[in-house]
Image 1: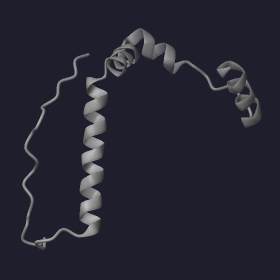
Image 2 (image 1 turned 90 degrees about the horizontal axis):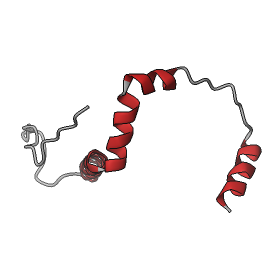
Image 3 (image 1 turned 60 degrees about the vertical axis):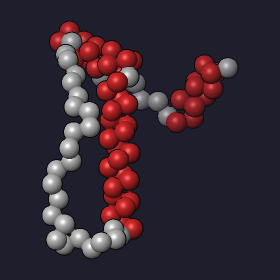
Image 4 (image 1 turned 180 degrees about the vertical axis):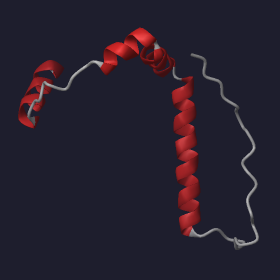
Length: 89
């Protein structure tokens, strides 16, 4: 699997006829959310551990094994919390 990115690609053209000269708080918040999502996505794409995990799960043999995993081991929250505490000491 190969992941390619286009850094600093131009943003799509926007219709500015309906937008006032000062962006609203909601528009700024949405813009900030989009910028943060893009930053997170770019970080994931350039992270070697994330890339290795993607390669592993997209391997046909691995993905077949993941598909056949079953969720029969139901554990209550207290047991899971206790087990986590034991393992983190």
